[in-house]
Image 1 (spheres, helix red, strand yellow):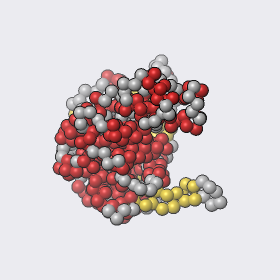
Image 2: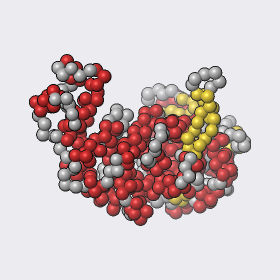
Image 3: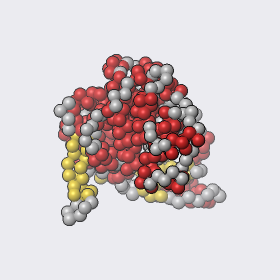
Length: 523
C-alpha cells in the first residue's frame, strides 16, 4: 500500500536538521540498505506547530538485505561521530520492560547532544494475559497499524523530506480526532494502557480541541476495564494519572475517565493490600479493591459532585493564580483533593487508611503526596465542622471567631509537605461545594473566580492572618522554658497559642506578649 504523502511545511530546527544529516551520512557511508524515517510524536508535533525533542528513528531494511537493527545502526552512528571528531557517546540499549511500556529492545544515542532512539519497523502479536507483544519485522504499513493512534502513526522520510501517512493520521490531525488505526476494542485489549494514553493526549492537546473518537469511548465496558486492571500495573496506571493531572486540561481527562467508568472503577478506589503471612507488614499482593462510590449509600450523588467540582474548580486554579505557582507534584495533589473531598467531606471517623489506600496503594503516589492530600481534606473538614460561611469571610473586618476558624485550618496546613497556597485551594473547593451549589451546576469558571477573588481579597487585607506561620515570634521555645517556666511538653501548644494571639491582636508589641505570658497565656 502506498502512503498519502505531503511535504513538511514547518521549518525544521537547525539542530534537528543537523541530526538528520548525520544519520543520512551514516547510512550512505556504511552502505546500509535501509530507509530512515522519524516516527510518532515528533512528526505529529511538527504538523501541529509544536516543539518536540522526541526523535524516534524507525529503520526499514530493504528486501533481501542484511537486517539493520536499532542497536546496530546506533553503533554505526557512534563510530561516525568519533571518526569525525565529535564527542563519543555510549549506545544505551533499552531492553523490553513492561513497567516502562517498552515492548521491544531499542537503542538510544546522543547525536549532536540530542537524544535519539533507534528501532526497526515491527509488527506486534499479543496474548490474552499480557500487554507485552511478540515482535516481528514489518513494513511501514504494518508498523503504522500497530501504533496506538493514527496521529502517532505518521512518518517523516529523511530521504525524501515527505510526511508519509499509512492510516488516516493527516486527516485526523485536521479534524482534531484521536483515533485508533485498527478497531479500538482490539487495540485496547492488546494493550489497555493505550486507553489511558488516549485520555492523556486529550488533556495535553486540549488547547487545540482534540477529542477521542466515539468508537473509543463506546468500546469500553466492564470486560475491558477488567483487562485494564489485569494487564496494566498500578504503577503504570499511576504514572498515566500523574501525566493527565499535569496536562494543560486535566478536567477534560477527568470527564473522559468518568464517561468510560475508569474513574469510578479503577482510580477512585481503596486498594487494600494482603497481610504478609506471619509478619506485621503488608505484602505486595492486593487483597481487595473497594470502590469509593460503593462505600456510601449516596455514592452516585457524591460522584456527581466530583465531576462538577473538577469541571469548574480545576480551571479556576489558573484564573486565581494558583496553578502557575504549583509544581507538577502539587498540581496532582490538588486534583486528587478535588476528586476525593466529596467522598470524605464531613467524615466523622478516621479516613487516614482509606485515603492512603487510594493514593499510595492505588495510584502509587509518594507518601508525602498522601500526607498533603490528607491535610487538605482535614483543613476542609475543620471549616465544615465550624460551619464557616463565605459571608463571614467577605465582611470588611473579620470577626475574631472567624479569624480563629481560619487560623485552625492554617494550622492544619502548616506542614513542610503542604504547598504554600493550600488554603486558597481548600477555600475554593469549600465555596463551590458548601456555598455555591448553583455555580457548580450552572456557573462558569469566570463567574466562580470573580466571587472567590472577592472573598480572598478580604483575607489578604488582614495584617497577619495569612502569613501567621511565617511570622517570627517575639519569644522562642527555649525562652518559654527558661524565662516563663513553661514545661517542655506544653511548649508547642503555647507557641501555637502565641501565634493565634498575634492574629487576634496584631497590634501587640513584644512587651505585650511578655505580659500576656506572665498572666497565663490565655486566649
